[in-house]
Image 1 (cartoon, rainbow, N blue to C red):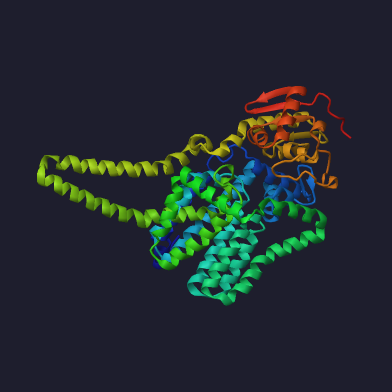
Image 2 (image 1 turned 90 degrees about the horizontal axis):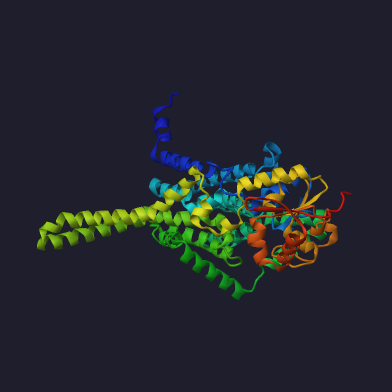
Length: 531
């Protein structure tokens, strides 16, 4: 194909070549072996269970109907996933292909944001490269979370907001407000982006704050009105419970934020480097914009939930903060450090040379070797851990992530689902975790939902759910099978005494049908007959 000379030069210019490089890296690390690594996660099962029913025109989650806000889910991502499973089937790979694609698009948007700010291709490349290869980001972008859609919408919004911050055109602020408002329909937690939006608009031109705030809230208000008209009683019950879980006192919010910052600083050196790198951004306007937007957003997320353990995925929408900080440190901080180190080496060599010239070559080689060793130690995790995907090693195990204890091995999961589906009738009840429940061809429920049905306290569901909200009886005593997997064993039992009691009863009175890897299948000796 022939291009005009100018057009050919534009396509093969440095910014486009660098973008292509990071895109290829991002695609490879997010899609390779996606069907087998990592294991199945409980929240992924939740999304597939909701989308499976919604694709058939039903609103239901493990026996609870009318609204899925009780499961902590907003509609936007579920609708998108329902379309995907309608086209490609209810499969874990369908979910992960969707979210990995959203993550790759986010890569482009982040590169574009830095490029538009600076016209510095190497800064944009450094940030996008870190976003593409930082091990924790890679790992969580291989899991099927709704936060990936919210994160994509946030990046669209922040690109528009930067145009407003830089050019002052009102339309950019209003469009940014709408897009960031839509993000709240993917995950309720993304309401935290309201504050940085208002702060940026207020600092630029306070007259635009009113319409910016109105447009941000419009998608959420329309959602509330629609739910009120459609299933008002169920929705307000769900809303009251959801709000009670996040409406903590100000001292508690401050304490949670301090704990999150402290533990991230202790457990992840990239966290300190990210904040340090933000200070190295050369332009005051760019530095102030990122510190304001991403800093306030992170504080908003960190105030209500612990994010240094299993809840690390709450940070997905603010992963650009990590990438911008570490990428800026590589682009601007590393040359400063290199210049100072070189000057120190030259001075040291000069001193030694003046006294004992025989050590000249030795000291030079030692300094070079020491510098290379430090750089190698810093960069090794960025290369080795993502590459583990290609050799079939679970990244969670290599990185010793807390989430590793609640991942269900893919092979164990598939064998268990195949076996159970050969045994059950559609009207049989199977109790297990959401990590497996979505794939079982019968009535299913979660160990938490079953306990809530029996009016026992749980981590994520109230104990007084109205009986009419249940599509069928989810009392575990009526289940034909109980499938105890790592989610049930390693998360449910340590956090809920009622689940411990239920498990002890099942293990002592039910028949152990078989073990499949990390999964134990128990059969009720006296299951009720199908109606």
